[in-house]
Image 1: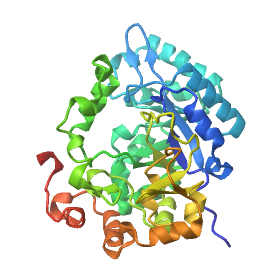
Image 2: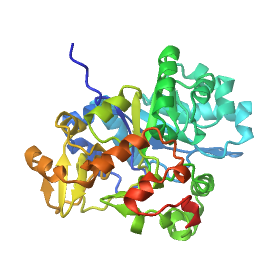
Image 3: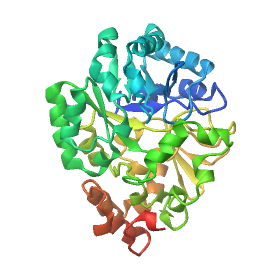
Image 4: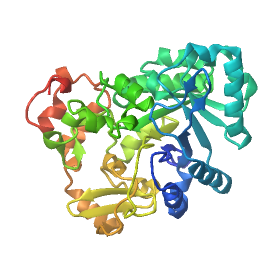
Length: 391
């Protein structure tokens, strides 16, 4: 019997809440291929619950606009792709346990529920344990937040017992395949889904991340008309460029992204993860970009392009890990879409060399213990670095 595909209904994608052009995401989505649309599991967006005594909402410091929200409702209605509300603030006020505030929060969520939204990320674990939300919205798919940092199967089970239906796993699972298999076994037993953030760009266990998220969620950088990266120069700015970027991809230790090289690697992960999550709610593409979603990456002065992941998978256009570089590209960039020509361009790519393919295999189970490994450093820099923080 032919194995069913592992790419339809697979991706949880971020709506570009931070995009200044309200229609850009909608236009990109509408213009994309029907197969690309089939591969989307849901679209998540942010909003904030505003109460006279408490504010609870979003750690990204941005919210969807009314026009953007109307566009998403049209996508949900026309294409049947679920929307997912995000309330993932790092600060989780104790006041949220007050009956009057729970009542008002239920009214807030209820407006989205009335619009047909049946998925919600919520970070407040004490609130979830009360059961008030689950009782009021029995058809809601409740997700925890990636920021809960679930790294083990036991933690996974604990969060299921809080009342979550979909458990969003920590990015560490991208580098701990053995534990991921154990977690999936328990997910199937308990009847819940797993969701894995496969690309974000944050270093493993970054000691700055909690403060970054708290400051950004509180809107501090908006008040000074700046961004975290522009204001604080000694954090990830130090390892997102220069010697740490080679062959179109940063040294893999500077992030905890999934390192899938080929069709076989894809199946290895896709068989044990229900949903792959892709970040990007802060994306602000300019107007000169192509208004169409797809898969693209740069080789020399050319962009290779595929309309769907199915096209990449069925033609085994390795290295797969490079295809997540862009959502869309500049309109006037030279673009290659012919499969045979793409294969020729990919044949000599760095990530198709034996040392790079070996590194991909190592990273599946390295657990981000860079100080005792240095395989990434040796391939990218030719020197050892125990900690990125030392830069």
